[in-house]
Image (cartoon, rainbow over the protein chains, first blue to last red):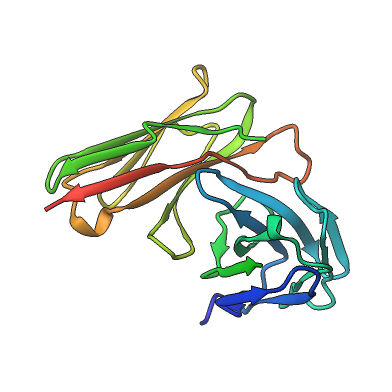
Length: 113
Length: 113
């Protein structure tokens, strides 16, 4: 049982480039979410999904897109990378929203130069 | 927006001592959760305590919840070097129909050998 798998672990982008951060879970969790973590701050929610075909914006959605075509996968797309998007990104899943504990991936450390 | 605020921001104790961290929040909640994050890793779910519960135990961890004071505490007994990590509380506000977790900025715990 792999849990939540994120790829890549590290990435360096140039300003203006686009890329997709991958997230996959094998626990049949309905709820999935993307967070960014910046030094000295708590986690900030980017986008989330309560099931396949359903996505919604979180606290800091600008510059990011998501889709949820299957229960297992929840990719995060950076449309045109900016230095302000330098951060550590975490994908998390749960049986059903925050009524249950979250399982986190190991994170993607992204640097935009 | 931060709902949970951990106190202290940093804590350094000797191995074998007990460590206590506190979390305060602002609005009524469905549950409160504690997570651990080792340096450079993803978050790991420790304990979820529901609003109708006052205390929960898991191994060397004890969590209390006082909804009248809107506060929670995490006690780690007989600390070990491996407990060195950041600890986050997260709350699931009742008013949020999707029950999104709101995160504090964390307490950095250092266990000295």
